[in-house]
Image 1 (cartoon, rainbow, N blue to C red):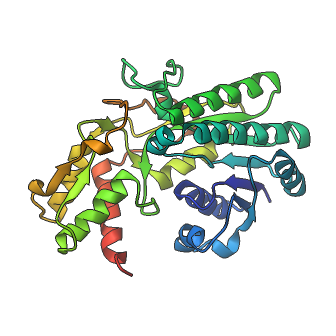
Image 2: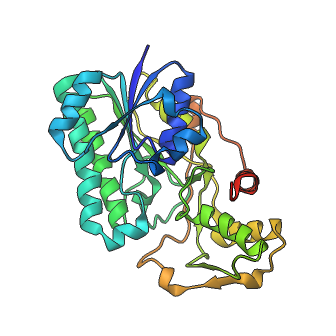
Image 3: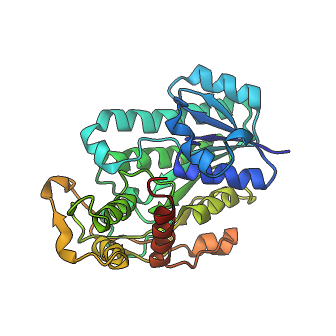
Length: 320
């Protein structure tokens, strides 16, 4: 039986990945900084809380990581832990850069010292490419980050390549574009729009207040994206892959789709410039052909259909 460690297991992707690995017969060990009641929600929602072993591990403590990796001796490590908010990274650049880089460095060093045959997956980000001038984005396009978060991800992305080349580790980066599910935290854009649209339709609030919605993003569905993560560690040759839908959608159109589902007038939408980021990417979408060709990964769902899945789920569970 294969063993896998998932850092950040209580997040959206961590929970879906744990479920996938359990279905494939893995023993799953989840690491989190602090495992509280709130952190159990996603694992409980998927019905897998009692099937994973949860340990509190500080990813900035190299000795603790080495100790835990030595005890488990996993076949695979999936690193999904990070300060993952672009907005927060502008407010806390030092914390973002320090944690996102050093946590990955500690994990890689633990693999080198404990067992170099452990396969390692790093959750990278499309934000690394910044204001790229030619679309769609490909794996070998130049990185040009425009936020502290993106800079931290770019630094770890190059470090993964370094450890792969120098130490011959099976270490890869999954360059994921935006992806959503019903497990998303409410401070993420799509979940916020859906939740507050329901509240407007029920007379609980009067408006939806947002920042810049004249930008386009490549959105996908998390349960399908985690399958690509697993596939990346099953091939013979370690490589980095872009995981995306291959299309972008205007944020304003996401709001309009939700408003239309609830028969909400567009006049209930308010733009607040205080929510604007210091710098913004106007449009970005990726090319997923490499993942489809080499991983056998499939993705053909429109984001409007994903939105309907998420809306239907929220309607069934709201206030429950």
